[in-house]
Length: 486
Image (tube, rainbow, N blue to C red):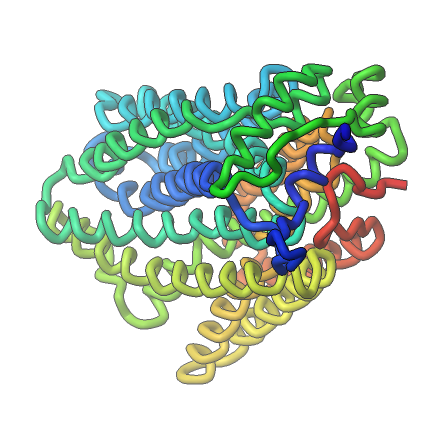
């Protein structure tokens, strides 16, 4: 008796049964699926580690290379600019060369530039190396999402993608703690180089591990490579006892159409069903990055000033390290709130839904910024309490809502054939907001004042909530082969 062919996601989502007919509650994850997830989390961890560690390393870089304020801005924006370009220029290659090849290549590229950062002999070399590292991290934005979402059951896709994304916050905390530890022990001008060097061997280990994962069966099928897709499916779903015992794939109708009519990049904007997904994936992410990076960059400074941890203009290396240690303490407090926010997102994404969390998160961010803006009209204890409550609420709500959901939605709302380029464009468009913030926030802060700038960011948060509502595509628990874009 021949077995009925099924689509890839039907096999992944299929629930095994015991011999007596008893059905388990949900599709169990295989060892390969967990391996893919673990290696994807490593990429997000490194991103948080090195990007946030730059903030701790920057004062020592400034002193070693005698940097101006403009030079400091270039260092802060270099990796963000790399992410902006890399997400589209490299992330889209996953649609052409396969998820696995890009998954490996991006980590190789990251490791090469990580080494170059650690040995940088000059300021221009350092900026170029940070930019190159950003290219690799930008590629990881869509690719890490794709390798997870295309290989795991629909019912747990949200929490596992967000779980991997959450390791960015874990990496940020680890980078801050690592910087604090090295500064406390070594107290040398070269400490910033050691911070980056500590990540080299772990990165090489991740490269080796990525060679042993499966290629995405979804991608193989979209390329018409039917037999290879079946072979990779057997590897992906290998378990003891084996279930299913045999895999016979049928091409998904939507993927067949996509294979016959290969969409180009421009169709993300010209075809109505793609345009809706593109707007939902990119515009709220852009608006979210405006406030998240702006507040993220300046909150440690504001908290340090508020609680009296500012020692004034550094006079020598000891002063630089002292102030750097105090800034690291303030950043660690914020990173904890980011982790709590992502934990909430993991538990709620597959229960409440992506769209509700994103809208609610944007509104919560606006309320947090409003408290911070109101604090500027008060002095003393009231000022401290309002600004502390405002920024803490903002950091929790952004990671529970738009910071997490925009990343999740960008990898889910596009068809397989353009999922890489679509998610890559969304990440790049978002980083336009991040880079703009890195350059313009200090200028606007000086020219228009803190309160006015915060009111503008409140407006961008509310606009993000409206755009999310207007172009909503809910993907909670939905088979990726059945995403509705009509």
